[in-house]
Image (cartoon, rainbow, N blue to C red; front, side, top):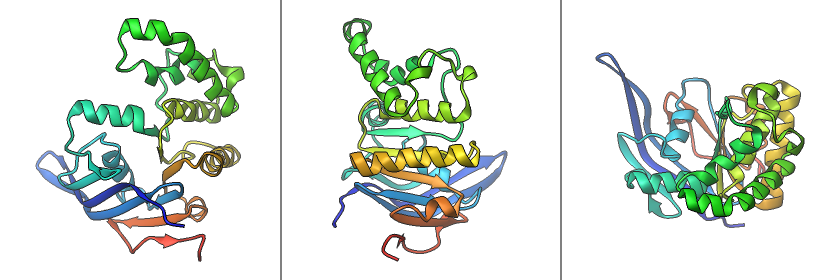
Length: 240
């Protein structure tokens, strides 16, 4: 089956500076994410894989190179366009959840739908947004914890809330940065099963960052990173 390229990085270079020292992180990376499948980006800590994902999410900008989403360059788009891309087109989940500690689970899930809305618009649609958030929490098996704050939830529950939040805008692409890295083995397997179901049942395109080969080998396509570069061309693990 042919899949369209949803997200691509072309000739990406990125360095960071510590005092007067320049630290190269990415050195000419080319990678594509195709629709409807799970793509894994695997490598050791410090290989540059998370930096690449942050660039593809427009959370940072490359020194050189281009990021394209559905054929349109986005790394040099306006701040407003990049904000809309992150809020509407993609969902992002992180290893450390990034839930707002003062909000309940359902309030955290509703948060993306509040961004960019006027007070009047939110007031008119708040019941609909809450109903949608409840449906998302139910989908990830967390509706019974809707009123609980992050401090009252386990790591697995917080990650489920983060996934529900990422799905609120019905994104076509989910970026997952070490989604099981802060979880015990059993809970991590539950999260991976949930992500697999979202891909298989909903056709959600997923780009997953991981250091774990056992996770990467279950993806449809795997790219291995080392020292800021792809080691070789993508390998189709399912076809192997």
